[in-house]
Length: 267
Image (cartoon, rainbow, N blue to C red):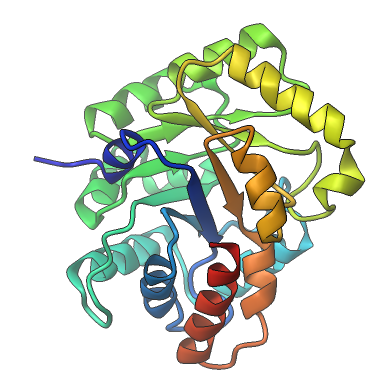
């Protein structure tokens, strides 16, 4: 029977450190060693990007990473095969860290929702975050994903009203994902985008209107910011800074080494 690693993880009383990685970035063959190294370096969950040619919600770093991944041959089918290989230990040590796929709905719809959910479970995926599937329009998708045992995560932003926060909390399977700033990913440091007091009040508001756990992402680049987010939320997500740190690697091995070095500075 399918055991969802995210659900199991969130039963523990710990603050989460979540990595976002775009597969096959910056070079072909990087995905498996990077996944192995992130797990060894203390990532609690790994979000794997599903590259899309028009990622309008992402900043330039993740956009460039998505385009690189597409040039390097990453499709939904290829991504699921990479997850399967990671789980089976084909080309790396078996990877057991929970894996959450994050990306836009167009490639999922093109693949076929039923087939995608089925193949994701078979590959070893634990959860999904599809930002442009709003909760009000995702009832059928949510039902099917939950029937498959997959975690579904929805987004909260600083302008989300209390009643909608409660809706998102009720629909997200295990946790929700708070955007720390309004804007595209990685384009501003949190301290530049909003005052500390405003962010604190925002996350306190989320806490008042949620029963499940929530994590915070966008603009988190260093250990001090991780700690400040842990004080207010249940986890921190780091993506753009990780991609920037490994972008210069010319081999899969170098990419994994850089990923591990960076992640240990956060841990």
